[in-house]
Length: 113
Length: 113
Image (cartoon, rainbow over all chains, first blue to last red; front, side, top):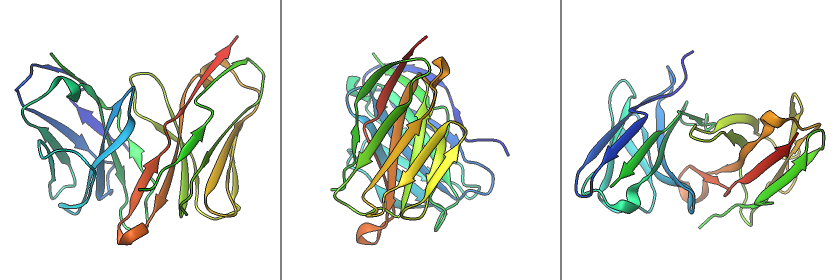
């Protein structure tokens, strides 16, 4: 089975812009979670989608949003980018209810200038 | 909220030495997961533990799910240079009716040849 894929792998944006990141889960997985990773804060949970519905949400401002499509692929969007949004954004997929082991993609490295 | 205390934060060892790291929490978890992350990549699942008291090995790696369900440890035997990286523990719970994966802040391992 192919693993979790994320596109793009690297991205450079300027303050005020918006960005959309994409994640394709492992085939058959219905749950997709997003994390922000920075050197100082570690892995921070953004949100989780299951069957196109947001099931859990972390403590991030409304500028961070996401969605999931019927094929379980997910996107996350960050609007009005700030310098502090520079981070590695990781997506992880799992089977869903009762199958909570998460498998991570390689991440998207976002740099905001 | 739930927190995982992972220790040590960093370790510097000689090739061939054994390594031990652990995670503790005041909360109960149903599942413990251990991941390894190389620079610029996503975390890779090493070991998953699903039952209290469970002891599982994966090659030179051994992990245990604490009997109280509040802790877990990971041992690496006979370390080699490619063991370098950041190791994360993660605990899964269904506290408050919502499923959640909580991560430790990581243990950075350096192996001197």
